[in-house]
Amino acid sequence: MTAAPVPAAALLPPGPDGERVVAVIVTRHRPGLLAESLAAVAAQTRRPDAVLVVDNGPDQATEDVVRSLDLAVTYLPSRRNLGGAGGFALGMLHALALGADWVWCADDDGRPADDGVLATLLDTARRHGLAEVSPMVTDMADPERLAFPLRRGLRWRRRLGDFAGIDVLPRYASLFNGALFRADALDVVGVPDYRLFFRGDETEVHRRMLRAGLPFGTCVGAAYLHPEGTSEFQPILGGRLSAQYPANEVKRYFTYRNRGYLMAQPGMRWLYPLEFVRFGWFFLVQRRDRAGWREWLRLTTAGRRERFTRL
Image 1 (cartoon, rainbow, N blue to C red):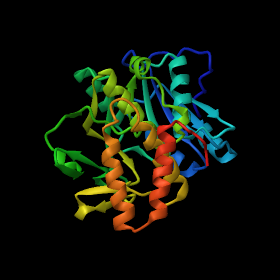
Image 2 (cartoon, one colour; image 1 turned 60 degrees about the vertical axis):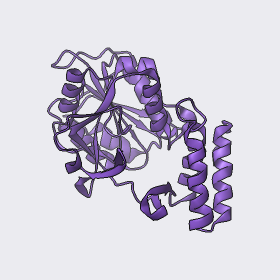
Image 3 (tube, one colour; image 1 turned 90 degrees about the vertical axis):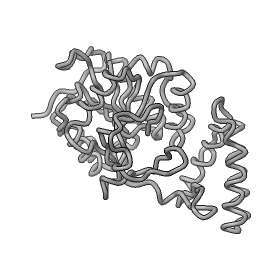
Image 4 (tube, rainbow, N blue to C red; image 1 turned 180 degrees about the horizontal axis):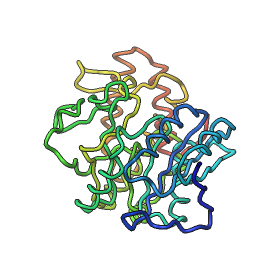
């Protein structure tokens, strides 16, 4: 028997620790992956007190998956595709309206690595006084390998074993893959910018947390499984640097346009000269692709001028 959904006007009863944890999952046309993600969320030893599923492409198969879950789930279908940014914004605001003390975010293509992830994140945030805490994001095909390499000092770290003996990585967080926010942290940094649609929305929230001076970090003892994301990063200068080159036009469009916007914001403006040189080398020297360089420059400039048109 499935748990009853949470009415929009209801106030959630607190969980066993006296606080309300609401999970927000954004999905679109991937009911199989969503089912795996929801099953892992439902199996947590400290279960969320409610789950909000934002569906950016409502269909019956997805709704059936949501309705079958043995948790208090609220299904939020959107007839307009809001992207990851808009989907998380909608879900976060709905969670706050329900009285959430904590908001736990996840995409539909990832899941907690074990049943103690949420409990570990909550414990870590409380012990260290963190406004936000993220798990390590590891490759679903090889859970000992990071899904996204992490630079520490002058070296890229690619495996969990590289962080042995560390409890928390301060001021670093992969958003929104399993990220846990205190509700009052969202009062300070806000919700993702819908204009970014997808790509870069997580970097923008990370930038805001840094600017706001909030304490946040990554809990090394918790892991979140996700498809690896290193294939987009092409090595340049003998592997000492890399340039992001998504495989399809849509991803390149949003990646470069949104990156242009981000590099015009306080705290990130120093990146633009470096990106100009890096991508100039990648397109003009390594790929000998003048059209690709012009496209990168056009999209980056559009983002810097806040020309947020869609493809």
